[in-house]
Length: 389
Image 1 (cartoon, rainbow, N blue to C red):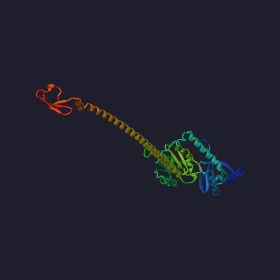
Image 2 (image 1 turned 60 degrees about the vertical axis):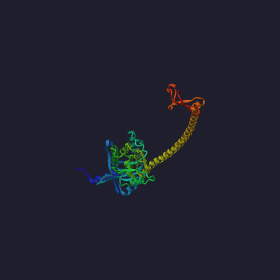
Image 3 (image 1 turned 90 degrees about the vertical axis):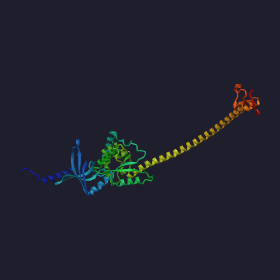
Image 4 (image 1 turned 45 degrees about the horizontal axis):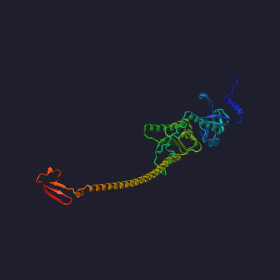
């Protein structure tokens, strides 16, 4: 009869051999394929080969008392919770259960390994954006001198959105802004596509000339830092970098700067800070307008003073010219008066000349006065009446 083992005996031998091969804990590098947190944490770990194939796959478990400690420490060091797609270095015990099979029991997680991998992935994303020539595209866009129409991407119920609107509406300068909300999911697996969809809607409105927005504000207030992973994705960062309007971000975190923060026109820490930035931007224009008003007033005052001086000079010149002209005309009149006086009939009569009139008309020819004609001769003193013989 062939020697055989029962299934449980086989499992017992496997367990015994595993305990001999791995008597202590060991450190394992792997990628999280899936993670379920139900107090106890259940993970599926993988190692990927070329072309997306798996080189290995195994289940792992972290019991609640250990999970609370290691996840809190991991969060403190990395700013993120363990999540699918993340590379981790874990300390495990290798266990074999006759019913549930081979699994790893997680005892610890090394956050420094994950930080290094996240930094590597982040650097690769930035290098790809630079290679695509889009890294600084949005940063190079200039904001309008006065910002009035703002497209806002945020969750409608987010406290940060409310803070942003309140800050804009209650600014100390009485500035007016028009905002239009494009609701989007701002965390979780669907956040990237949701935000990109909102950007597409804004761009479509601009193309159809429905509204000419001055800028786009991407805000997210509150929430856990672990929910910010969507802002490090290449897809979202690439859309923001290539967007035709200036994009301002106020994602509401202070620990890290996301890749989206690095590619947008201006990055502020919080939604309120974005509102203050917009208010200050327009307030600077108020200051500039006031400076221009004061400069214009000074120029106008100077021009009025110059014109007054010119008018006074013209008045004096005109007065002098008129005075000289009048004097010259007076001299001419005097000369004319003298000339008239010298050539007046009275002066001629005084020299012995006389004037003969016939029927009130000057008599120049003797033939014009036949015999019997009565004529009057005007002398220097008196008249003579004569009859022609």
